[in-house]
Length: 419
Image 1: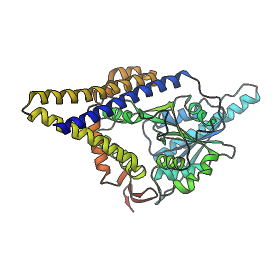
Image 2: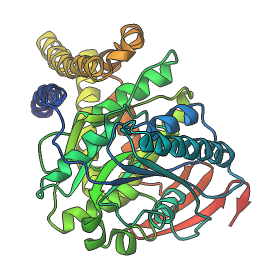
Image 3: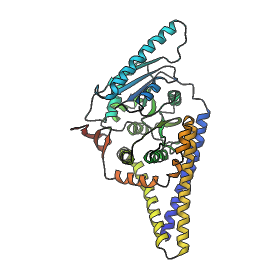
């Protein structure tokens, strides 16, 4: 009995600190949305690995080309010309170049041009030593224009708003900032799995803030080209890895640099898959964390094991204890822990509405999942972290990898081809 209350008090304290972090996140978000980005906008190159023709490919590719930014280059990268995305992107690039030529004629006619832009499509080929996404990024780097000062990495399944690039690059005007990053924010849909994914992933997003422990997210991160080269990220950190963002963050940490989180670069993501697809995706996120940032994994194991043990013990007391005082006390402690978690989930619902006002109808219909599903999220997380302790094989976009270490992997299968 006494042991249960020790665990419960520790979990209550953890839940209270997490709720306090939720308020800090919301304050930072509101502060960021209120202030304009810093006036720093060097020429930038946005490198976007692509694979397959997802339903959001056309919309998001167009958004990357339509950024409100003085001068930038957009580089789409596919592994092969046989990729279904290749034909669409090639057509989009042709249209973009025709529009660009028209803009030059307008400039000659004294009509102001607000968005000088160049675009390219690169075919990377395949690597048996690095993840396909990382290999695409390395190929994209070779296509970056000579005058580019800021390198930006993005995901095609994220939905950038018109001011995304300006907001992401602006923090690099501060010499103390090495990397500027956003994060994904899953919007809920009609399916239960979509809502659970939104609740699960936003619990990670709201860990970001004004501190030195931020993650870098590969779907929205920027670094000065000089720093990228100085840290030898392509040569020393992106070789033999499947994780571009953990590897880049490791390079920054080892050099004593800083990762700045920019709330305006929280990007909407959507997924309509079922529960098993969500579970495989969530397991993959934590397996990658286990391999590339073991300390985060160990902290997660400790946190979610404490949660699971406390609740199992508390439920056993409620069901089996002969003392009514013990039953009531255990029920009160567990209820308080759930209430604190749901309160933080409610803050995520508020944050989602403020980040994505255009999604008001969707969030009005499904946004309660951010707090209603909060009691379920720690159990899913506990499963994910437990699986990651024993599994190092992941499947990512049809390719199966064995993650041997931070710097070594083996490609097991690519599509139907066993290697």
